[in-house]
Image (cartoon, rainbow, N blue to C red):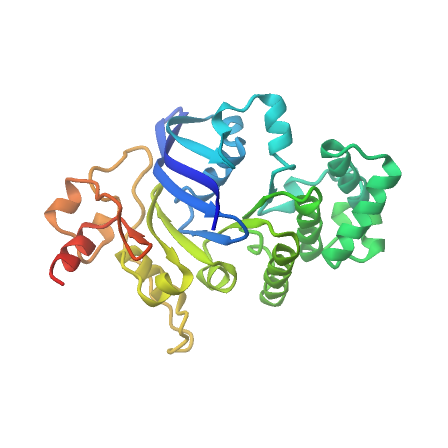
Length: 324
C-alpha cells in the first residue's frame, strides 16, 4: 500500500501571555492511500492541532513549528507557497470540521457555497458548477431543496452533510474529518459514519478521522493512533490495537469506553489529569497517571518500538517484552 501522507517528529508551540504552550512533542505517523486512519485521545492531546498543521492552518492560530516534516505525495508541505497551498487545501486535501457553522457563511445558501468551492478549485462555469454541486449533494444524500437553504435553516446532521459535500467536491486524495460526529445524536452518528465509508469506497480517498470517541473510531478506521500530551504513544491496526492494546493509556481508554459492553452502564475513569502544556514534562508524559510507571519513566522519554507493525512508546512495554 502506497504512503500518501508522512508526518515525522513534528513539534511545535504557541506563545501566550502565560508562557509557551508545548502543543506537539515529536508527532510521527503515516497515512496510506485509500485507508481510514484514526487519531484518538483526550481533549487537549493535540489531535486537532496535528490536523491543522497538515493543512497549514495552524499558523493562523499562532502555532510555530519547531521541528519535523510533513510530506504529502512526496512533496514538502511546509515548503509550499501561497499558490501551492491554495491548490493543496480543498483540492488535494479537504477537511470536514467539528462545527460546520463555523465554516459555512450564514449569509449564503448551501448551494452558493458548494458552487464557490467548485469554481475556486476547478475551471467551471456557474452552470457547470451548479450541476456538479447537485450531483455531489445526491451522493451525500442531501435533498435538492436543502441546497436552497441558509445554514441556520438546516439541522446539525444536514449541516455536517453539506460540509462533507464541500470536502469531496474536488475529489481530494485525503479528507481530514475532525470530530465530525461530536454534535450528532447516536442514530445520526451511525448514518454519517456509514456515509463516510461509502464515499471513501466510491472516491478512493484516504480519511484521517480524529475523535475522542473510541466507539466511532472502532467502527470506521483501519488503523488507529493513540495520542497523549502532544505525542502518538501507540499505533496499530484496528484489530491489533483493540485486541492487544500495549500502552497503559490505550488500555485505559478502551476500558473507559466499555467497548465489550460486558457490564451495562459501567465506564471506568482514568485517574489524574494530562500534564500542563506550559510545563513540558521530563520523561513519559503519562507517568504520573500510569499504574506501571517506574523511576525510568520519570527521567527518560520512551522511544518508539515496533513489533509486527504495532508501534508503542512505553518503558514498561519494553520491560515486559524483554522477559518473553
